[in-house]
Length: 236
Image (tube, rainbow, N blue to C red; front, side, top):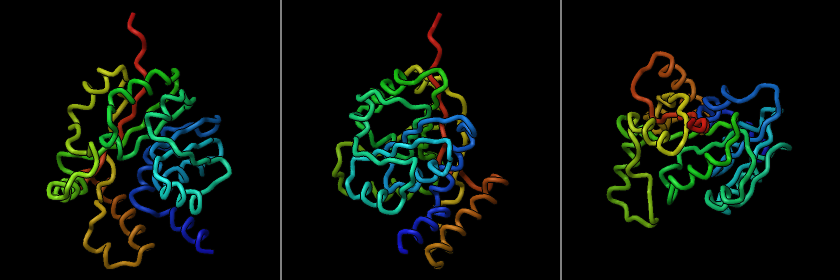
């Protein structure tokens, strides 16, 4: 009963519902395709992708606790969870039509090398979706940066600093990608004052609805950007 309730609530988890919806609009509606979500965390976004009947989804993460939560609460017949870090996953030359890196690019050591390997694995129709912080005006990032400025660093790398919107194109093109578009997403930040006063399920629903309004009318600044990439055609 608890697992079923959590899975039902996942339909409204914010911002995962917005992350998934922003990517799903670019995925095939009828033809079968394979999608890799790495790292997948607790599996909420992978589960949203697996709701597409024509999708085969692989959620990959290095954390055993996250994978355990994902398998317990966010399972689906067309969704598998596997333990991989991003480097070992890419080194295994997986086949995919879509690859998602959600809010974690700046955590990767040697991210340029990982991206270059991903580019080499992409076929002509493959798409790479990357969601990154808006480091210039996003409230989520501002709070993250403030908390990390005083907290001791326990990892060899962190998401600080990142890329500005103007730096996306030269950075990814230097690695052999064609940048298709950059979409601002998640206008409502997760620390909205009213959200903390609501019950958990209503909090997520409230934030999702508020984000819809802010996105429609471009109120405030986006907290993230969705970057959509393909492999650049060979020169000559």
